[in-house]
Every structure is written in structure tokens, then in C-alpha cells.
Image 1 (cartoon, rainbow, N blue to C red):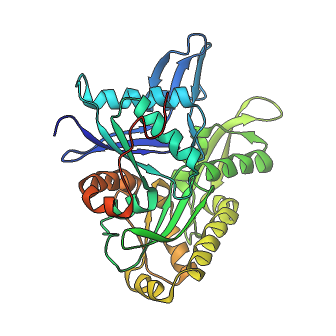
Image 2: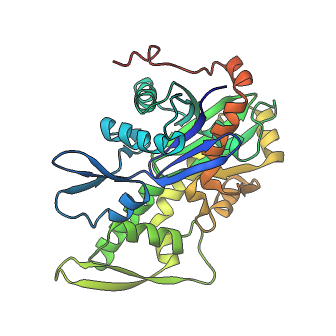
Length: 342
């Protein structure tokens, strides 16, 4: 076979690209810095991420994907093209791509995602739902008739699915994920302390001390920001259990949605899941105690997959190798003509 096959997880927070036989070759934040006058891209990925909130005059930093959906088509195309070219270099052969898509993405969102990737340089694209990819990447074979329950908590969305025999028996997508947690932390700091913090600081608080359950031995850190009233720099000491209380309503919504999903699942699949447990994937599955939270809410064993943030991308790579099987379930590569791209 000529050229490359690529697996792409184009997420709200990061873009992860895998190549069969090589593994994950790109893992960068989904940020782009561009010149506001010429709209020329200056940086993409980690460098643009660290520039966010620190932009010099004439430079803007954006996320072209928000809440799991593409919000800036042209910038998204150029960002994906930047990373694809980084992999294939000067190869004249365009790659085939398996890309992860939100489980409840609309037809318009799916077509837009295919259009972005083909415009960025792909030959053809096959979309596979994120829970299926996450299951593949976590080491589960969702093509087996036994049931598996996967919860993928990403940056923009949380995808939940009961999977059996290569299809999703029950699915749900919530717009509650990493970005929601960051916004709640920012709001908490503003309302309780009168301190404005940047997105980077909110993420640092989430990653370092946030918890899905209350800690017996509390932890703390210093949050740096700007006082709303004086406009001067200030530092506030905050605790992990304080952030737990702040995020508790969001976590309650996630566990409630997971419980409702079980109520719609057949008794035999529930029995299978009782034996196999629940798999957590996605970057936010690293938050302290989140496995314990779901375990208490569902009365099931809950496991966090190794390298959970890479599971979806690894799953797209596995899907590339199983396309001869997935083809039987209606998954196929689509070309420029199939989605009527001009």
C-alpha cells in the first residue's frame, strides 16, 4: 500500500494522531495562533497554547473546535493540514484517515469534520464514534457479543456508550467535560474571592487539586490572578475539597446520565457489564477519585484505562487494522465526492 494511514482524534483540547506500526506520533493542544491582518498561521499546537492569554498586538489565539464541534472551518483545516504535513512530510501520496467523532454528532457536524480532514490533505475519511474508538484503545474488543460500558470524558464532551457486537446499544453525549470544569473553577474564583484567573490557571487548578470525591487529607495550592476591584495582581490559597464542592453539580450530572443509560439497557447486557465493569477514558478521567465516584454511583467496578487521554487515538489506529470487519457494520471511507465538497 502506498502512502500513510492515519488515525486522528480531533478533540476540543488536543489533536492526537496515530500511525499503525508507529503509535502516537502527534499529541498537541488544539490551539492556533494567527496574524489578525493576514490570517496567516504563526503557530499551531503547544506553542500557540502557551501563547493564549499572552498574545502580542496583532496576534490572536483560538481553539477552532469548541464543545466537540468545529467552530472555525478555515482555521481548523489549516491546523489539521499543519500536523498531517508534519507526519507525511513531502510524500505525494495522500493518507487515508480514520477519525473519531462524537457519538451523537449531527449529519452536518459529521460532513464538516470529513470536509476539514479532506481539505487538509486526506484522500478519504472514515468516521468512527468516540466510544468505539475508546473501547478499542483501552484494549476491549467491542466486536465481541458481550457488553462493555465506556465513558470517555474529554475536553468538550463526555461520551457514554454500552457497546456490543461492534455497535452501540445505548449512547449519550453530554456537553459537560474538561472545559466545563475550567469554567466552573473560573466562576468560583470570581464569585468567592473577587479574583479573575486565566484559562491556564483554571486548568492547573483542575489538574493539580480538583477531586470528584472529598479527600480525607486535603491538599492546597496558590492561585494567581488579578483582583477585580483594584486591578492588581493577587494570590489566593485554595483547597482541593473547596474545588470538589465547586465541581460537584457537574459530576452529579455525569453520574445521573450514566445511571439513566443503564435503565435503558437490556438485562443481559447489564449482567455482562456487572462482570466486566466500566472503563473510563479521556483526559479528565485522571481527576482524583473519579473512578470511585462512578463506582459508588453505579455499584460497579470502574477502571481507568492506561494512558487514558490517548485511548481514542489508539482506537482509531486499531480501527484502521479492523476495517475489513467494521465494513460489515456500515463503516466505510468517504471521498471528496461522497460529501460533495467544492
